[in-house]
Length: 420
Image 1 (cartoon, rainbow, N blue to C red):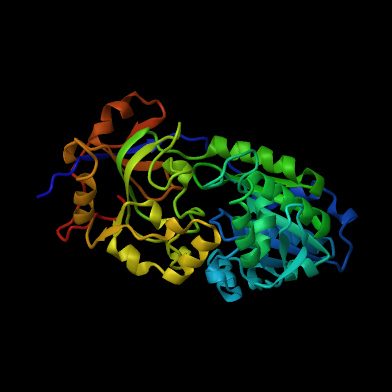
Image 2: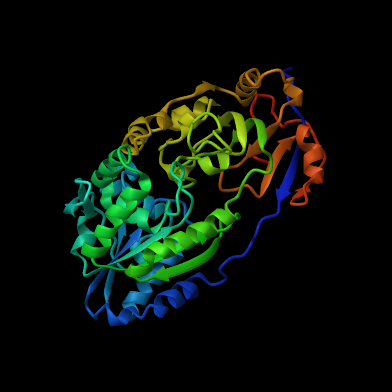
């Protein structure tokens, strides 16, 4: 039998601050803006809803809808997710439905379209696309989770400003903006496009959400148009502080149970993997340094979109079978990240894929390998790690060891049990 390291479970101690009453917090923040001074009874308000796996997204969007209904306005929800959902209106509506964002629940229409209006040209000379339904509204409320971007770094990354580009720009806008980022910096593009959107597209406010390391809503903040940039910056600082991380800097093999667009834009968060700038290794002072990544499945909510599979060196054959090549290709080409769709070496069983991966980590005997096993890059509270980390875990005050090392749980057919 192949030699594998023994493993034990640990629990990480993270900041668990969270919002106790989601609807009340949304209402409190929106009410503080006194939007009734801007939004008149009978006017329409487009509210954005993206494809990221945002905790409590249905409750957040409904609370926003209820706020505008109370003002006498006529809100509706717009799927704002670039090329996700296969780049179709039906696909994007379907993504929202999997999150519980439905017309009966919201009490308002969902208007899905891939059509855009070209609002203007930026100073750099490329067109600004904006969702047709949102552009027809009297007002637009931009809602998004704020978090570190998976490929770019700065004081503005993935959040309210990005939603105005990629989300509301739909597939056409997303394609152009990602191409433009090959010529100009992400920071320049996001500021350039968002400033035009704020000025020309009747943005009434932004509603930003930050999550803690337990995938819970930690903070909600609303801002008037003039304050969106600074709010985006402040929320990003908080999101970086709360970002869950692996507790070890050196990893020989990382097993990831599932990847998907509801987990991260790159299927698995490159900020967690230490692969923000290079798909297959850490650069500069990035941590952790992971030699090999194994992916075991796709999330149901990703609908076959396997974007990010190309960051792994190995995977199970079932991942390739679950993958929708067309949807994955659309997303990765749109994002100018074609390598994210590349298929790794794959095997039918965990035993085979682990044996292959452990054979490529250098002069380390397999049973002594530094192995970490996680559910996904959002859920890092409890992880499984190999006995090579036992002393480090005992010395780390932020780790609680939940049991002694034991054999890796591989069943008779060569498959790992479900994440125990």
